Length: 455
Image (cartoon, rainbow, N blue to C red; front, top):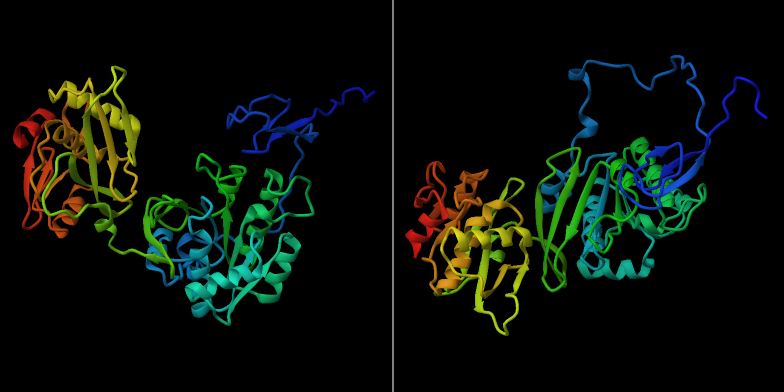
């Protein structure tokens, strides 16, 4: 029995997904709502112990005297990738790049390593999923061979660290973090415990050596990054690499960035020669046709600071059979499309209750922001009335449930991009600002006024 006055230690439990600690086991984590993730980790301390002052790594200095030389971004030579990262790779930074299998992550990062090796010294690529020969074949195909680019195939953390000591690279690319295991901790390969241990060890090495580290991560079937959420907190930058399998277009987004904006987007096109940046992707998202057709309207989306022209298409057909009408969506938010569809029918006096409605974006781009509401409403009404919109028209605005059209952010940049692409008429909400040179603005307060003006 324990001595009198001494509390017995209670077992502690910790969530393997988010790190939440609990004195008792529960089936569902109260923090991240995951089921069956709390595991017993031992006994917590029963009381607070006094902590005395210890040695510091460096004295505190006024913030204006802190040196910035080690925190400057170094361009990779790939402008679209540098745009996403906020200027380039920062020495000592740790990046997590995630995407579906076959989307082009390994090809792009091999090109990044080749550019860094040619400009800044040794770069090391460690592959845990492919043999060294397979990676060499890809490097030959995209022209990424360089004497300063080193390659290894390892699945043990100790071996990866040995390669780092031998090569002393300025950039380390690990493909992927789920395939490397640490012998210091228990757990299955690719499990939450192993992934966290490997990422923590590599992060410590990267900070100590000033070595930029890029970790490739797997994704789940829902598109989320596989592994514990603590993995995203450990790294400095989280980059998402996505794209449709049937399309050559690839989008790179930064969902977390400690060194720059976290909402920038980079556009790439994948082909036989590798992944190539697309500096002006607006032409990919807009159909080029001689004569306008019903059910099509162009809008301008804003991805970070980059305005992109995008085309929204709709098709309204007579419902067959006697059952419920179909509503199919591709590249758009289905909930947003359902709301705009209801507003078009109720406020715009367009009969859609007995019709099949199909809505899609062009070029595989995903449009989720409300700025495309007006273009979607015009496309649906145009398809229902079988009347094409005037050529050279672009529409911007958020549609409310009462039919009003609201302003959206970045209207000036959106209109300037549309004018640069040759559009001469813009349908906008009231008080949208001044028009770019050569463009005429048509201000409409609500959906009814827009339909009356165009149809």
